[in-house]
Figure 1 (tube, rainbow, N blue to C red):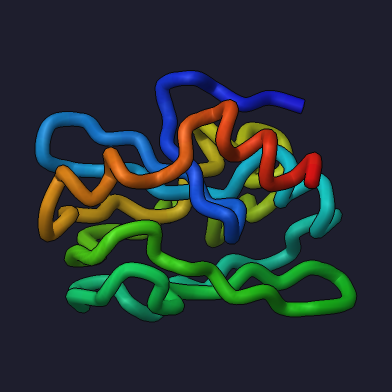
Figure 2: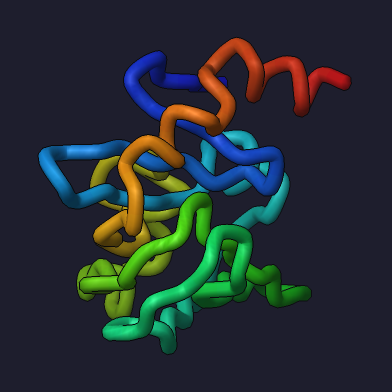
Amino acid sequence: MNFPQNLKYTSEHEWIRVEGDIAYVGITDYAQEQLGDIVFVDIPTVGETLEANEVFGSIEVVKTVSDLFLPVAGEVLEQNEALEENPELVNKDPYGEGWLIKLKPADLKDVESLLDAEGYKAVING
């Protein structure tokens, strides 16, 4: 399993990567593996400002739908349009082409308080 060191993580299995004042958010390699084949990604919150840990969308797999939780407060700027036609990108490349949303964090310092790769590994390994 892959845990890039340049990302921050949540115990709900989302990752966040800051580039300038914008952040990319997606689900972890572990999460996509646990979910199985992703058939649909629904992000109805584009243009909304949400609090940390609020649901910003959902991922549908063959047998279930899972909520997606925002790692930090901020405005959801954009969803990954490629996922409309190819939701399986989340399975194939969860940290790259399978990103879910672009977010403008309310406070970039909030990202620093999230788990690093080692902290996230500890969460999933119990």
